[in-house]
Image (cartoon, rainbow, N blue to C red):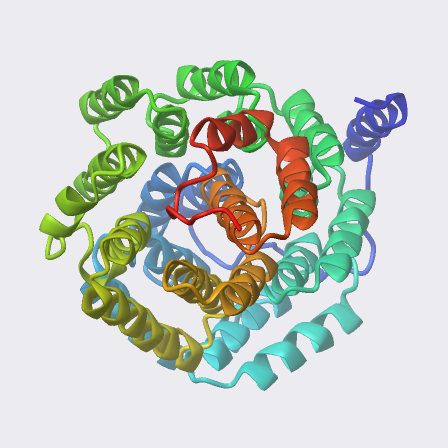
Length: 454
């Protein structure tokens, strides 16, 4: 890590001890008549900041039970409850849409009003409320963090980066901002800078699992697998139910072809109490990674109607099935999977889910590239792989691997079209990110798609 960043991190922590924020709402931070409920809520907020969502849910639930009029506790609890019990969460949401918020403080009113605007399908009002609040209270770290997140997931990475850096200037103890900055750098392939941010996060919060997990993801993406394993195992040692680290360890084993090792990780997660749906997805990933690596195209197609593939429940399984269909010339299945993805894309677009919309556009472009390349339409395939590459980033281990894979299939397509110079230039770029991935591709003799060399 650069000396300047270490100094800034250490200085920021010292400054935070005596830091007094200006331009913040006055009065109690949260509106409740119960000190016990407030203590539970604050414990939940701390757990949430550590990415310990299950722990946070329990604390918010208890805060709401202690004070059923504690609006923000109910709102936070419902948000975390939604995946586990959507019916109850929706009941709470309906009640929150109608609750009187005139007695709440300005920040609490903002949270509920902005949430209502988004739930009502009024995104313009949500943006206006955010800007108006920060115009009045420009140094409120909780809301400034929201604005940075909006910029990030809206694709304005430069603005998001500026806002997160400003957030650290006014509130150095909000160390999760280092995590966000690390992922933003990682998305853009600035891996050295990303590592510095993640290590800053780990330096300040060494007893939290998430900074170790984030470093593990980075190390997987760039092929530093021994360091990834050490970091992810440390995350699990700190918090044995930090499921993301089991998932990343298992993924690392899969992409390196160690399938027995991947299943050992899955069994460890099972014994530790990982939820059934997460275990199901890991089992699917292990099976489809193994079948794809062995090019067992017919076996993959025999599983066409499996629960792994249906509805893109596990995206990798569906994409692997599309590749298998294209490899054996089963165009009906290949087109059907593309059509299914296009239908899902429309739903995401209607719901305003920008992040998933961008991902599914890339998935569709990638699958079109696969099919077109195998059908001999090399020029059009190059464009589709290029479009997929534009939409994919190196953020997170799974999407980073997808981007590298897409680029390698473009290399194979360029070689088939006789564009050797372009192919080797792109392969050198892949090698600069993850040498192990490039070496594995070379060992396959550049024949994942089975194209003849031009």
